[in-house]
Image 1 (cartoon, rainbow, N blue to C red):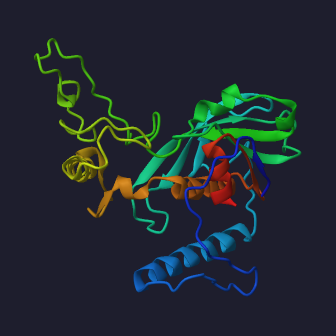
Image 2: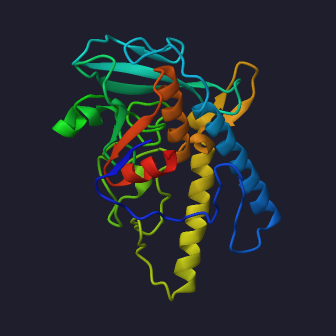
Length: 284
C-alpha cells in the first residue's frame, strides 16, 4: 500500500508490538497482563486473517463492475463521478451479524482499468464522508479511481451517532435552560454536566467535589447513551448487538478492505488529511 500524509496528526498511542514478516514474533517492553495478552492474541489473529486475505487470489471483479453483493453503483462511466452503497457486516468476524449500508462516492479514472489503481481520499475527523472526493482535485490524483466513504455512524449512515432531534424551547427559566430543554437525545449531555471540550472541562481540578461530579455525570451519560434504542441491533436469529461496539477506525479499515476486494484491486492507496493520515496508518 502507498500512504501519503498531507497533515500529520499525532497518534494517541502506539502498541509496542512488532510482527516479523515470517517469524511472526511478538515483542513487548513490559510484562503483559493476562487480559492484555488475550487482547493481543486476538489482535494478532485478526492481523493474520487480514494478511491472508490480502495475499489471496484477486477476483475478477473491477471498479466498473464490482461484486454486486457487496458494492453497487447508480452508474459507472470512465471519467465520471458515481454514488454507491457498500454492504458490510456489523461484526466482520460474525457472518450472521446485521448488515450496514455505507455511502460511497467514486470518481472513475478516464482510462479503465485505472493505470495507478484505487485510492481512498479521507478528509479528516471526526469522520470523513463520501462527499469528500467531490472537493478533492489535482494532478496527483490523475490515473486513479478515487473514492470516499461515509464511516459507520457518520453523516447519512445509519444508525447515526449524532443527535438529530434538537429543538428550541419557547422560554427558559430565570436560572437558564438545561440541555434537556433542547433535546431528548439519550446521548446528549446530562443536565448539570459542566461544560466540556475535547481536552478541557469547566471545573476546578483541585476541587474534589467538582471532579467527582464530572466523573459521575460522564459515567451516567455513557450508560444512558449505550442503552439507546437506536444502537440495539438484532440479526435474523434474534441475537443482539450494540452498534457502539462496532464503530471506529479499526472497523473503517475492515470496511475499506471489503471494498478493495469487491473491486478486485491488488492494493489500496490512501490520501489523507489530519485524522485521515491515521486511517492510512491503521490500514497499513
